Length: 199
Image 1 (tube, rainbow, N blue to C red):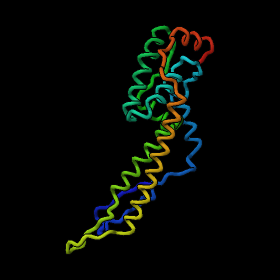
Image 2: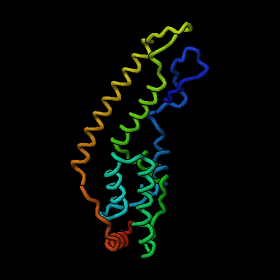
Image 3: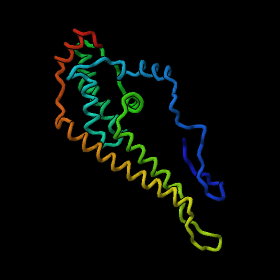
Image 4: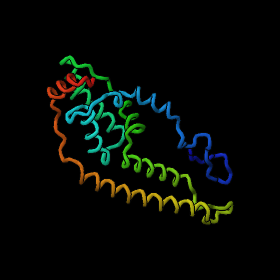
């Protein structure tokens, strides 16, 4: 559901655009086609030192502290430097992966609760900026719009709850995560992938 303020609206009321509502019944066939065309989903890799293992562990290590676009660029660049280039030199065919592919995969196919909470908090802040609890009459008298204030306070409470939940998730995440990410063993990964027809 998109949320915006119409500048032509004299009362500055909030308006919802029902044409772009989120839906729980997304087209499953379309989602399956997207997964088939996603190079990260199509890349069958369960090896401990394989590319997807490295991408997942690096994503999990940095999702709390980095911005999304910066993280996706770093993952694509790391994949190209650590796996794609060296494996292609060894004669192993590898899928080409861009930052857009990484973004699409982690937003649609392998979502993170921390990333989702960060997005929700950002959306709530955008909605709060639209609200105008303090108003002014034509003669300059200030007053509080009760409906706008109630909506603003509800968003404030929801945002605080989301922040607390995100802090819990981050604590749980950092306690279960490995402290170091080892450089991949390319020879072992290449041999394992060739022997198991994983690429």
